[in-house]
Structure formats: C-alpha cells, structure tokens
Image 1 (cartoon, rainbow, N blue to C red):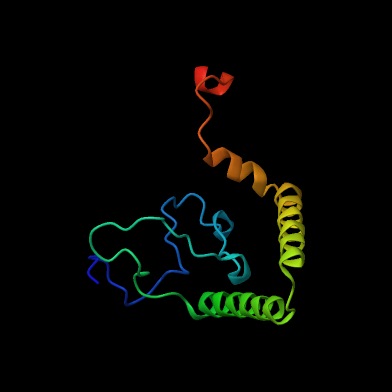
Image 2: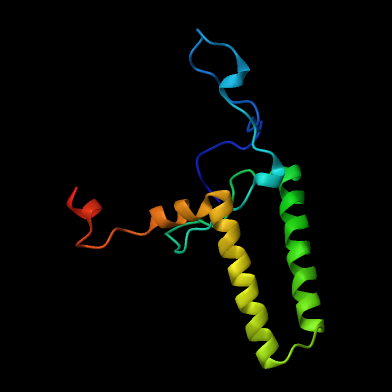
Length: 127
C-alpha cells in the first residue's frame, strides 16, 4: 500500500509535542491495549482502506487476538449448549437486555444515541 508515509522508523508511541512551553509528557497518554478497538468504516473507498499503515503494534495485536479468542469460546459454549428454539430466543433476549444495561451503566448508550440524527420535528432539529 502506498500512503506516502514512512513506516520506518516507527515513532507511533513517541508523539512530537509542538508547544515547547509545556514539555510535560502528561499532555498525552498511550491508550492501554485492552481499551483498543478497531474502528471499522462500513464502506470502502478507492485504494487500500483496510490496512493500518506500518501495522499494528504487537501489544495491541495481542489484545485484539485475546478478545477474538474470548468471542470464539463464547460462541462455542453457546453452540454446544444445544438450546431449543425457545431457549435460544430467551437467551437472546437475556443477552440483549444485559447489553442494554451495560450500555446505560457505562455511558455508551448516550454515545450511540448521539450518532442518530434527530427527527425532523424535534427541538434539536429546530435549534
């Protein structure tokens, strides 16, 4: 892929602080690998859009791999439970309810709601 950006040397974890007045490194922090999620854009554009220039740092790749492994284990457990159609329906409702509770508890529900454009007649649309 050609991005016009050099990937070597790779200084992804050493940002350049432009303001010399504050040489304090507390103006930034590295995201812990366990908090890293791939951002997926639901469409593709011309050129290479699916690749991370320079690759993903190993700690972040490892965190993604561990998360994927947990998902696979979860899917295997559910599949091996041999639930009936009614049990699967009940289980799905339970998981959706717990997910909804988690969204509210963590504040992520508000983030999701902010992605939805306001309805045409709402007060926000008029503002």
